[in-house]
Length: 426
Image 1 (cartoon, one colour):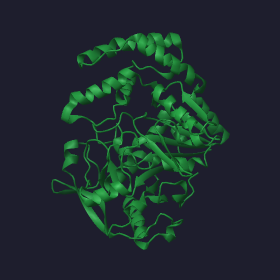
Image 2 (cartoon, rainbow, N blue to C red; image 1 turned 30 degrees about the horizontal axis):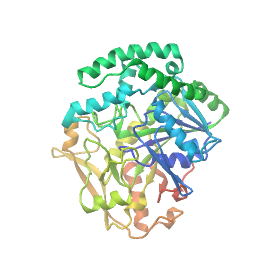
Image 3 (cartoon, one colour; image 1 turned 180 degrees about the vertical axis):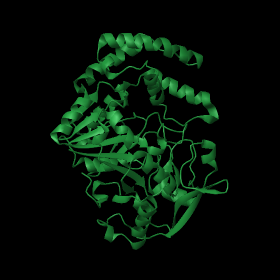
Image 4 (cartoon, rainbow, N blue to C red; image 1 turned 60 degrees about the horizontal axis):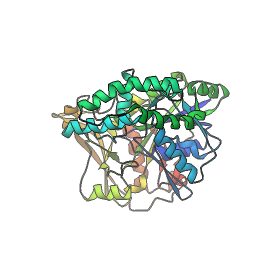
């Protein structure tokens, strides 16, 4: 048995999909442990680009078992659209397993998501309005509908009636349209029939795979800095994308988690609202954004751009149990004369080396930088660490020094072949 958790170590969009796809070539099972379709993975191979939202990244390999675990919230309509889109592009031979304990995203969740963002005005979170937060809220309030309920016509009918009684009152209070029972029941009963063959107890499946000695890869959505518990609250997602959350979200024992690989861009980006100490504007930000195609996979929103922040990276390492790093989009920095890395913050005249819990305090933090010489060479075709320009090598070494974490992988382009592995992780 060998397990590897792939986590985003920043604010999401680090390139988890590519690394999951790359590492999945060695895996027997790929597990999506949490989140919903509010974030996307972009995977490129063979000259083709695929944008996944909720389907696990091992879906392209017919030998891999792909698990959508109990910690996810699943929009059946969107998931089936995604699956049909893959089938239309020739991805027809796959293995997919959906947890009967995962929660279901329904139309009223999306309506409430948008209504709450509008209600908050200037204090909006910047959600994708896909209904993820309201679905997780229903889970915590014990009025959620799970996949097991959805595929049982009698259970679904009662659960939906109970939920709509509450949800329609909430929508009325927010001045939004309400939903008819038959409207949702009839539509989603059809989706239930289609997903039913994929549904099982995925916790039991994973235990069987562990006992068989399988190689299991766990992936999540977003990044550690968007963790509901440890992120920049309230500008966070609705679940925990940390390595520490995987056992709970997948239904396995903590002792089975062996390695946690933190995916990290060679710089930093963020989507939505919230503090971002190393954020930059101007020509350098535009250069990085355009070279890195820094626009949301799902929303197409331009991402905020900044220098690499090793304070938040160290914080993510600590709370998520990261023991290796993968440095992504290193090639994007080619052509810059000088590079900066944040090694500490200054707050109220004091030097600090962690992320404050208070949002007001975090907004006061000013980054302290070290400067390194950049490189001009095109590195998109290198196949080893030694082939990198010396300044690019030094950049990676400095990240290792500041984070006390070994770099196991670096990436110099979007394709699988542009991934250089420095250490075996499985």
